[in-house]
Length: 177
Image (tube, rainbow, N blue to C red; front, side, top):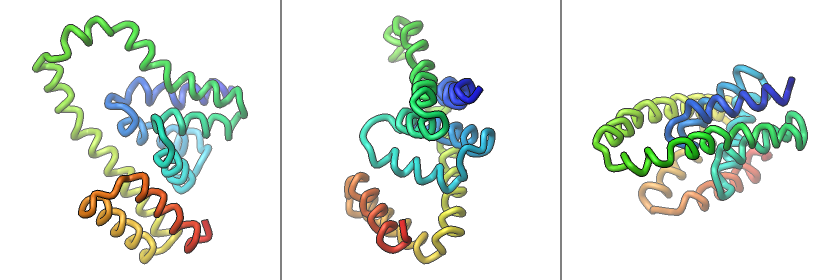
C-alpha cells in the first residue's frame, strides 16, 4: 500500500502542478506533510532546502529522498516514476500541438493567468516555513538568515547556490544543524 501512496503523493502534484517544480512544491508539501504525515513542515523545509542546493529538478530530488525514506529503493522508484510520468505522458501525447501553438496569444494568456496562482501558493508556503523557522530557531536567526539572503540575492546579485550554502553553514555552526 505504501508504494501506491507514494505514487499518488507525487503523481497528483505532477498532473496538477502546471508550471514545473515551483508550482508543484506546495502540492507535494500537502501530500507529504498533511495528507500522509510522513514529515513535519520543518522536515519538509529541510528536504526542500537540500533539494534546492543540489543540481537538477527539485521535485524529482524530493521524490527520490522521500520515497527512499518511507519505503527504501522500491519506494524511491515508485515516487520517481510518479514524478516523471505526468510530464512524459503529456509530452508524448501533445508534442505536436505544443509545436503548432507555442506562439499562440491564447497560450501566452493562459501562462500569464496561472502565474499569480503559483505566486500565492509559494507565498503561503513561505509564510508556513517562516512560522516554523521562528518556532524552531527564534526570531533573531530567522530574521538574520532571511535578511542576509535577501540582501545577497537582490542587492549584491550573489548566485543562489552560494546563499543556500551559506545558510546551511550558518545553520550547522549556530543552530546545532
